[in-house]
Length: 242
Image (cartoon, rainbow, N blue to C red; front, side):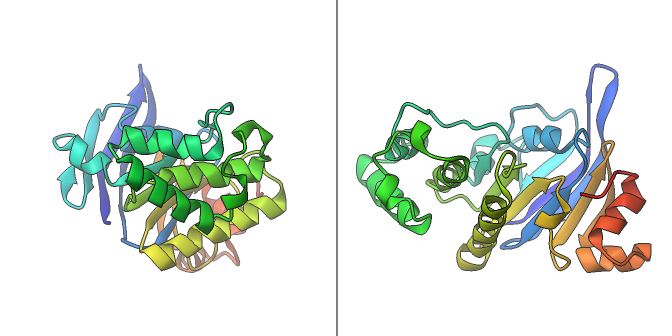
């Protein structure tokens, strides 16, 4: 699924948060949206998921305008927000079923898709456990499984590894990359952690609402004359290396 942002600007009151941001996401690829806290990443996600209304600019998904054809576009999106949105008192499977119902899926479809996602995320043996009994890494896997229940073409993840240990962060990152390869899923992974980004990734560096760089990580490093992404990020934003 190809996504195009054209000259997106947004402000809260008189405070600008995004400033003429334009980019294109390529189908079946892992894209890293890299920026320090406060860069505007969550605001951009809010606009892409219609939690916030577009003020200036246009978002196109497979050529469909999010402003003019929102229902068609939104059916193609799965999202994992920074804050956990699972119902802790429901079981893992019940959380998946609830999401399926919101998307108009039949009970049979929900059962089939939940079985598929639980197996893929190695959560089958936890299907009947209340979510509150799971650790942070497993909860994040449930959230991604839930976001994929309706088989979207675009997966948005806003700081998905917040609160996880190093091993869980790395495992989750690897798994999402596998989804791109196996399912041709388009992924936009927002983070401020350099270690979650690889040199060959398509990298968008956002700082103070401006898109400072957009391209393969190693190409951006070469253009800036820096040896790695951490140094490039610091040179462009002045933010400390992570």
